[in-house]
Length: 86
Image (cartoon, rainbow, N blue to C red; front, side):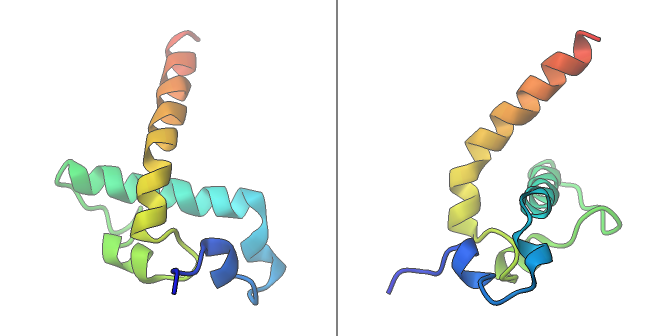
């Protein structure tokens, strides 16, 4: 059996969890936690533990997140470029 996707896991959750803005906010939070972890930092006020994210049905699984990571890196890179030009 294939693992359930985020969309499948939140199917029965209230509409709030399906909003694109909320899905992106959770992805960004998870991305921040990942990047902090990669640098050897942990900020329990900003993010949860990595394990909390990958075990929660409303966040991206490890496999899903790994696929999204290059795109998030590109997005953040573009945001840095725009912010530096201001």
